[in-house]
Image (cartoon, rainbow, N blue to C red; front, side):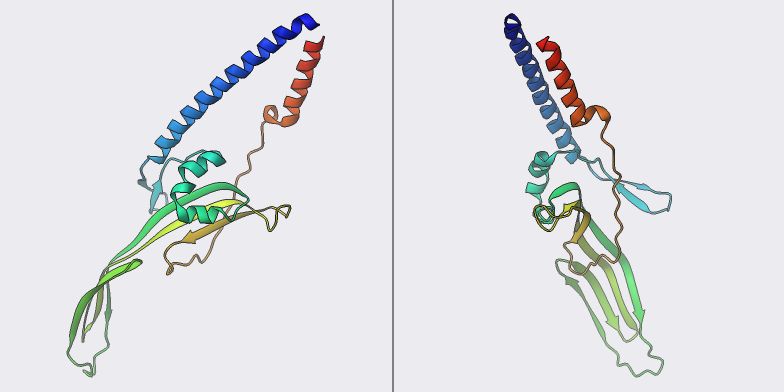
Length: 213
């Protein structure tokens, strides 16, 4: 049996070397694919409801890659994700509400409103609009409101060994926007039998038995 030990060692080292090379190649290829995915641009299409849908490629990453490519570059998202024990998915988007013109007429049938006219514009971080008002009414034009939204789904627990709960958090940067309703669901994908730990344990024990004999 001893004369086979050097061959077993050589074969084992060879297999480990091949696996290491394959892993490095996989990591390099995955990083390139991930970078290309993050560089993808938003496209739009009209859905079956007749409204516009935005679509983009989705990054598939492990925890380290997610931290390096996404969380470290987005402070709001990183702060939201820090509340989770395990992060499953993250989504960020920027949205803007635009309204061309809103006109509100005044009831001046009695002629009690004095003649006047005021116009101007309001600009701040969260909204902007032009306005014009006179005795007939007030008109708001070019009304715009912006927000950045972070959506994180993952596992939360109150302490290290506490009960795990699947949760989705939605955070908006615009303080004037409030989420009034939220529904979230995650599709559970069962682990294939050949990836389960006890299958590999059995294979390792069987392989060891064969080599020993």
